[in-house]
Image (cartoon, rainbow, N blue to C red):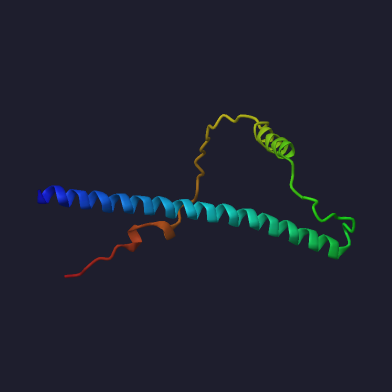
Length: 118
């Protein structure tokens, strides 16, 4: 009887901890979503403000968006991808030629050895 009571307490605490963990993760994801959404709006506002201040776009409407359409982004991504494949395939064979060098005592290990006199 005591064992069953302890298991029910553990079950209840486990369920509470699980629900709490799920809620924390859910609210953290919501917070991240809204912060990224607001960051993009803030950046667009700063771009509009900077362009109007410089006089480059005096005819900007309040609701005008500077977002790039999805088709344009897809075309740019496909162009970059295809430009990477245009290079020739190389054989990937390394040719190693031994260079003959004159003897140099600077790299000789025999001069690093010391003789101990008895």
